[in-house]
Length: 405
Image 1 (cartoon, rainbow, N blue to C red):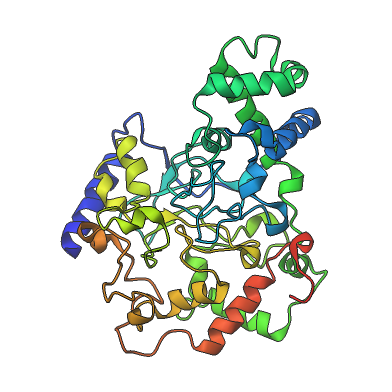
Image 2 (image 1 turned 90 degrees about the horizontal axis):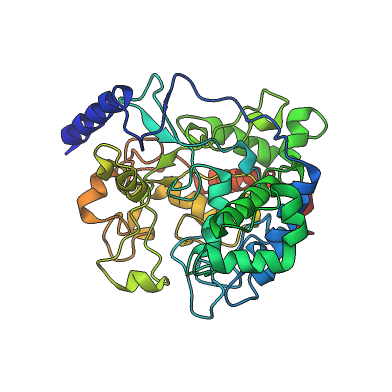
């Protein structure tokens, strides 16, 4: 199976480096630098902010973008759901994925392929949502407006009517007098306004204790410093292999705590999700996007999900793409002991139980700390896990720090 996997990767790499298809992202010669500050006008940002918090734009009314991306939780959350995935505008409309924070999205690049010195072939990065299906932030912002499990608008015409009733003067001022002549144009304009808000300075605060530390205006305590060392240590946490950052740079934009890539971590199945009661149902992640875009051998990406930024991770309600964990410590401990104590996580006795059996060979079993035998000593001790959690809490922006935490 491993040889077949390597062959597929090499073939897809040759294809991507050669004759790219219309749906294939570009192959970058190097990782892109952090995005520059956008040139959105204050008026467009203000309009996007109004749309973000407006509960009149859902069907039925009552749900806004902020319902799932709650400011008090660093713009994450699940709209009152307690099963790890978001509740939509209708009483029983529960999704299948955890709601990530929408802070710092300014720095997420469009989809691209890149091959570093250690990779066998180019691999995908960038894009929005857990499965990278949106290529731009404006496209991402429109998604929940029409998702039947989220804000549930039937079509652009229905949304355009709501926008015209509430925002006709503002939208015409920003997008021209003809913005409502075609519903699709009004919907796209709303996406651009939401994009302006989401990439504004308000949504990129850089006010955590870690940010103060790299700027030289603050310190980390001993546990946090131990956690920082473990985070970087390739033989211990090895976290920064995916959650990239640069603590030698005083520029916080160099420390996004993600490489914007994808990984097949094979988190346990969240059996509280209604769809998961069907044993034939699997959320396959990136390979659905890859198939839709006609990437070569799309099945190699089944089980892969976006690597999220760890900024403000400590204030989230739930963790992983399926919201299976409700504590940050459990999420860190899973990484530490998935290989050595799989029974702690896969209660049915089936490893990688939320990945289709045909694609379990895609799961990452080679990276530290996944590369250990069952029953062996984990790369991280319980104390190490505690120190990593302490460091991750230092990534919380000042306005989201809860008293006593």
